Image (cartoon, rainbow, N blue to C red; front, top):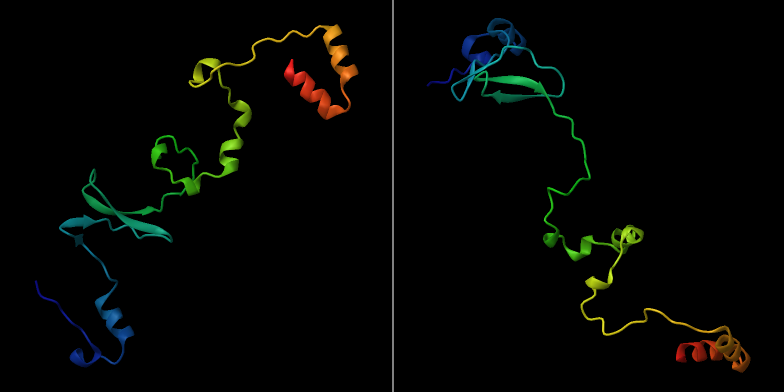
Length: 140
């Protein structure tokens, strides 16, 4: 393939405008052996190869829409700790619950406590202040 170079000096024309008038509008018939659609593109269009039509065509840029659905795009084991903020965790705190069967190292815990009114009155009467009251109740 050879390249044709046209300049004002080589063809004796006085201006580039005259060259464009003679040569005409630039056109491209093929790119990489594939036809180029002759439709004139508009602002913000791109040239994309369409395999179904076997040619290059102008088309609008796709709209970029951000979706915050990371369920299929993120492998949670790969999220750096620096990207997990306290609010990222606590914003869902009210939706979380832990059942007894999920706690593996729980030795013992208080399941029920009965305190009669007589015992309660005795603790209140014996307490010197609120801190003492708390200590006495905790010891029951």
